[in-house]
Length: 161
Image 1: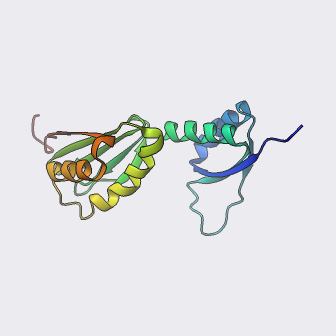
Image 2: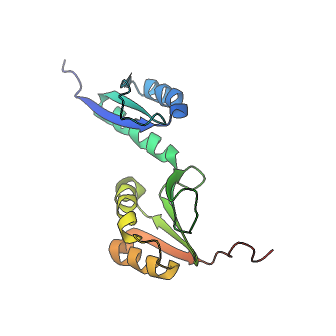
Image 3: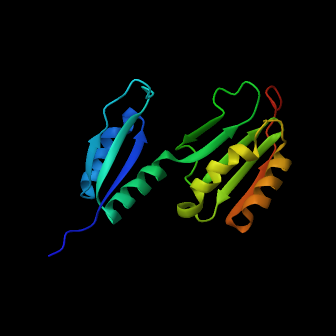
């Protein structure tokens, strides 16, 4: 009898997500080892090593990624956070908020494309002074049929009250 090929993967999580990640891993037969903190590692995260069959580790990684939700890029002056993931936005969706509106990017094949899209968007929106239409055009040109792009107006603070 041959032993299944073991795969090792590293995942960085918020400390509040660790118990659920351990439970999920156990349900898939994946071992979890917590990496000891080092002086340079941010205190706000925990690093785990997942070890198990390739398919099981892949499934756990995918579910953990989905639980992070979508990506928000807030380019408005004074925004508390410029780039963040939130479960308030559906996995596979990127919301870009500009001073003059909002661009929503829906990734059609999130399993393969979402990481590529969110890793490229910071360079496409660099400078933060682009408008919603300009960003929508850049995203459409870059990713073509792999994404659906919509724009919407967002009232400025104090408008529409």
